[in-house]
Image (tube, rainbow, N blue to C red; front, side, top):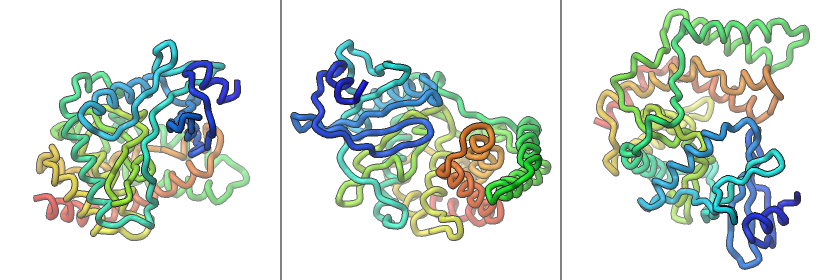
Amino acid sequence: MEMRQLLHNHYRIDVARAELLTTGRINRTYKVTAVDGLLYCLKVYSDAVQEKHIFDGLEVTTYLAPLGFPVPQVVVTLDCLPLLRFDQRRYLLLKFIPGRNISRRLIGPAECFSMGKMLGSLHQSLRNFPTADRLLNTLWKGSSASLPRVFDLLKIVQAKENRDAFDIFAINSLTYRIQVMQSLDVAPEQFFHLARQAIHGDYHLDNIIFDAHGDVSGVLDFDQTCYAFPSLELMRAISFTCFDGQDFNYAWAKAILQGYQDVGGNLSPADYLEMPRLWYCQLLRGLFGLSEHYHGEADPRQDEAAQGRHHTMVWLGENLREIKEFVWTVTQ
């Protein structure tokens, strides 16, 4: 069924214009302008997204919206359903949040400070989320349990007769992980003294909307919401924002940390001290982009993300002590 007809039949919304905003491996997002001038965001999910992830995200945004957070708000169907299942697809209609995405090359300390401030506020409020323990638990396995999976993927790549540039990269990345994990345990149990709670799960520039003044005016895509370490999410956001594959922008990282602490935050000195090592351990055992390339359909964007994570992982491993001291100096 054509999108206009679908929105009319199930939401009584007459569409004047629909614009594809993003398309990815797991979903497509459209900006919908109705005849009456109202704006909506329509997400179309593939089978790769577990339904629990979608409903966990809805539960969290439903909790945050009355607290004043600029998060997506659901438009229910005529049958009062938050998620429409039709023709083997799933549709989620949301009220559109005005603002703009800002690419990494255009941000500055002010945007980074606002980014950190919003994340600190989210973590403060989600600390009291009543059903956090029922969200997806993202704890990973330790080195002994993770290494066989890395070895298996390495064998698949090495067995290829004709290797391309990505294959060479994959061999180098997997070999690096094996060498490090043979002497370093990445098990999350060593971090159980750190805070865990409900978190956004995918907080980075692509999921943040800014207003004309550089302040965060919207936080999007809560379908990776999970029960995990808030310090990991903070370090991940800093890493994705401040490291470009070669250089680390300490001024931006400082602004994010200061923004986070400006609203109080809820991290202990131990959380700040351990967050670089926590992120490094997760990078080591995670095969994001690599598994998808060899076990599914290769996607250039996933390949690029895998390469970005590899460069971050290697750089962080080489500079772990320096980053640890930097975070400690800024936050204490």
